Length: 124
Image 1 (tube, rainbow, N blue to C red):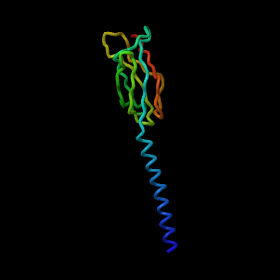
Image 2 (image 1 turned 90 degrees about the vertical axis):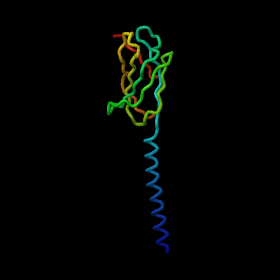
Image 3 (image 1 turned 180 degrees about the vertical axis):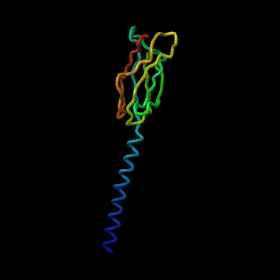
Image 4 (image 1 turned 45 degrees about the vertical axis):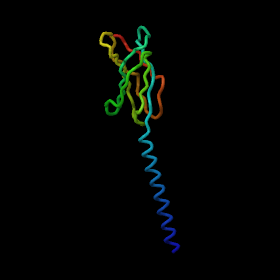
């Protein structure tokens, strides 16, 4: 009888350890983060109202999130999967302007919320 209690306790402890690893992995992969900042025109420093902000996964080049700037050029995009190396592109949607899509320099690893990710759109 003592052996069966020991075996049961051992298996119960092993099950708790294994399930703890499984739940930790699920929690880590389901965490999402945000990116925010301001977009301005590089030559005038005026806010770039209505600029499209696209966020791509650096590993797959797939678009993973998108949004627009407000009247003051600010944007906030949430729900970005944790662990992704993100590339940010600002693209002025007003075709009358002479600005090109501009990349934020480098990538952002999504292990936290990123603020002050500012972009200055360059003139053609």
